[in-house]
Length: 308
Image (cartoon, rainbow, N blue to C red; front, side, top):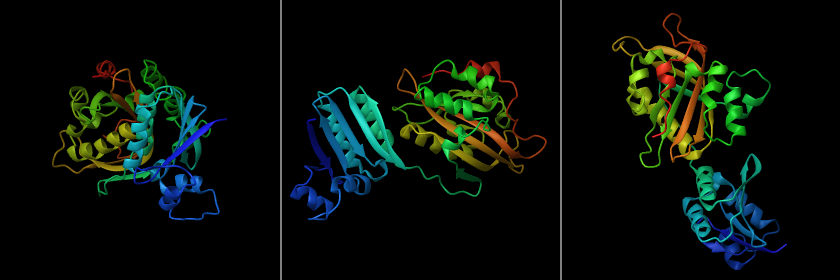
């Protein structure tokens, strides 16, 4: 098997393995270990390999890669005559993905290397990240069907998603947000009628910026999560504790709520990314709290799903 192998250093420079230039970038002139594997996994190098002039294989540890290293590889891909690509990346274990397009490969590399999002610390909103993979353990989670759909469809949005959510009593507590590369500001595409705390805004808000919801501090906070999920292409599963200001209750005490939240990014036929949020209340104030999952969905809201 014929291989042509190069490495991109954290400075964005191309070097050949086992050369003085590579050892200088490694910082070890005489390694007695697999220096290429070590550089990729621990130092942010990217390995770029052409196999039999038919496959380009790109190996990286996304969390360690600098932007200039990523850009060097993406620039090289633009001039490639090969049309089959394999990305090998480390995420607790080594994983592999294939693509038959340059644009798809470049986009996926950007998603993998997107900086990890750290939510702002606030007294009103607490986020406790959960392990997304636990949704697939057993049949206990009500959020599991949508997570399964996202996984088996490779994140492609289609017309079966809304009926699926309705069938599993998720639609009332679902929202769909759209993010386009041009604007990059999340906008409401659908708001389930379980979000009664928004008042009339749950109907009039479709098409508006997420940050303009009645509780604007909460709107600004959740906006950053939508942006992060859209740019990374990765799901989020969290436990949220929040103090919400209900529509029409300005000046009154905020209402406490605790809920599970699943954010899933979906590709659409346009360049807009849809993000579905499904939530499940795990604790709220009695009386006029947030409507539990399972109430009927508004026909108005169901007709509001659209791509810009």
